[in-house]
Length: 186
Image (cartoon, rainbow, N blue to C red; front, side, top):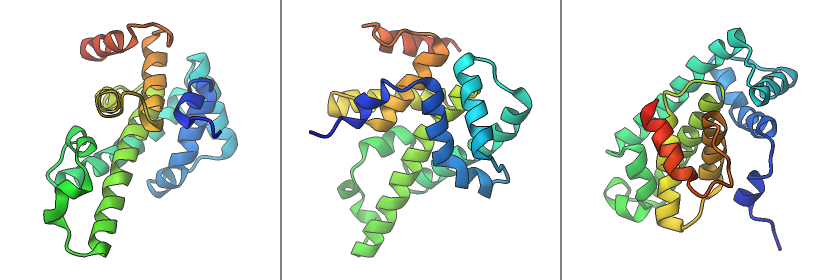
């Protein structure tokens, strides 16, 4: 039996989670002029886990991540969708946007990539100490709980990032209420 990838993420250390997010964004960050070596990504990931971020290097990464998230939000807005609406919208609900299979595949790819970049980028920004997009983590988590009854990979990554920065214990049965309260108070 294949392990459940989302459940597997619960066992990762925050350093490993941060490093995986960096690797996911490495090319996209480089396209924005932020070139990170493997050792730099590992050092920052280790610093995140120790809650001792290297401010100067992180300050160079944050604007690029913010731009990637903003671009992805703009992609969704181009389809008339917010992030929450996009997560709740199936491609069959967007038939007015596509005529051919190629159109369908292109839009589905753009929509899916935008959703992943928003959720994963928001998680990485949150781990790096910038909470401008933390609301997207709650949106992804709540969507999965309502739609699936559980968390998929991206929502689990969001949960881990959010609980880490908010210092909420993962096994806490009230973690979601506490996370919502932390997000709205901040």
